[in-house]
Length: 349
Ligand SMILES: Nc1ncnc2c1ncn2[C@@H]1O[C@H](COP(=O)(O)OP(=O)(O)OP(=O)(O)O)[C@@H](O)[C@H]1O
Ligand SMILES: [Mg+2]
Image 1: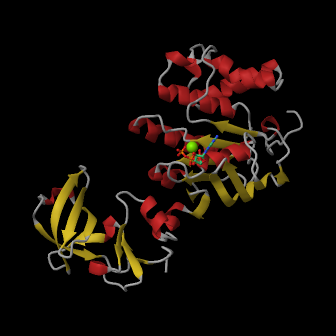
Image 2 (image 1 turned 120 degrees about the vertical axis):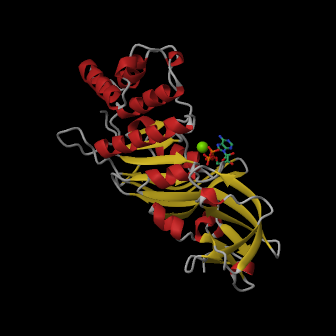
């Protein structure tokens, strides 16, 4: 490898990779402020998911780490080294794009070999790495095919294998599962986790799917409007969202938020939150409501209820209760599960 960063390797080819540190990273495209002072630490070997709505700046963060774009301000450190002056190919960072970006006129094997040829990896070594990566991703029998002869899931695996052959210190994955159907997404997600466990390489995984963020990451980082809103272990962020944005963004159906507390009890200057699973049907419950809609999902039902004062609340319920729209229901908030936020700032109190 030519003068760039390399991950520390041990005998069986595993790499802890390199840690990443972002310091006050900012980036504008014309008048659009894509990033507005992003600070982030990803320890070596960790898998972190960046999650946030469309346009929040997730891809921009990856592009700046990869060196595909330059920040207007701030620093990117990989393995403790400021990589600001290094071109992408010297950063030992492999990025997988959402649209695969495979070469259509090359076979799978040639796609895997291409980058190594450019980097002047010796032929025998390049072939060994290509076959090894193909085996890891379960595409060994597809090596002679062309991208247009494969399914989306297979192409996605080729794109991942192409990153694996680079043996980078850092993987940057930009929504690598987004184009897969629901079933395939779940199995590929498990494969990605297994791959991360095998390779142990630092990985930043971008998704706008909150369930994917929760299940994949050692830590989730919630990005909104070019800023990191919250980071932490998935359960911690879910249980203690720092503001109403994070509270609504993680969790499906989203958290109920009631201005002033209303039926949930509270004070005028607050917003009170309650997750749908923390709102229980209870014949003696203090909250009187009528069922507006019931979505049955097989294993559970989601009840949309309208309270006497007009407040709408969502509750997760048992699916076999046969509640019908218009039915009167009574609800109770599970004690200790209320979240309180400042009505002005939206911050957790
Ligand atoms: N090359 C560009 N030129 C102009 N604006 C851009 C460019 N790239 C990104 N932006 C803008 O910067 C902001 C952040 O974009 P970014 O692609 O990082 O969002 P994202 O979180 O990855 O969104 P998505 O989930 O839709 O992929 C958006 O407002 C976007 O329109
Ligand atoms: Mg994006």
